[in-house]
Amino acid sequence: MARTAPKNRAPLPELKPDRASRLSRPAELPDLDRLIHERLRLGIVSALAINDSLSFNDLKRLLKTTDGNLSVHARKLEEASYISCTKFFEGRIPRTEYRLTPSGRKALEEYLNQMEHLIHVTREE
Image 1 (tube, rainbow, N blue to C red):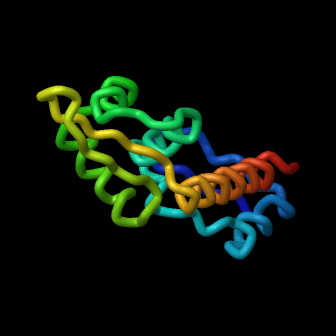
Image 2 (cartoon, helix red, strand yellow; image 1 turned 180 degrees about the horizontal axis):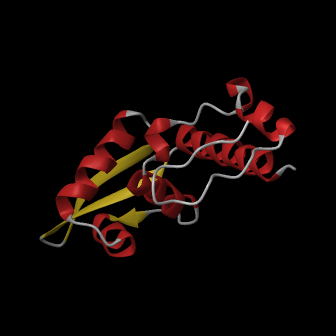
């Protein structure tokens, strides 16, 4: 049975039966951690996974985001205990430093394993 495409577009290719059956089995697709899956939060935990700690300003520059955006996403990760936040003064300048917690590292590792599985299933022929 041919799949139809919207008007003004080329016909859609036929799916191979084995590939179509894999796509129809949602049990094979991992249930991704929605907290980490968001682009900026994934950037935060990834950056912290390869650094002992990063300051708020370091993360802001690295991720090319705004104060407000970084603050909201970092708070979500902190509330989930994926990252820890330490506030202190360096002289008279307030500083905020973030670290990845053991549970955050475990969650990131699980997320990466799930993505690798998803990539593997997608590339299978």
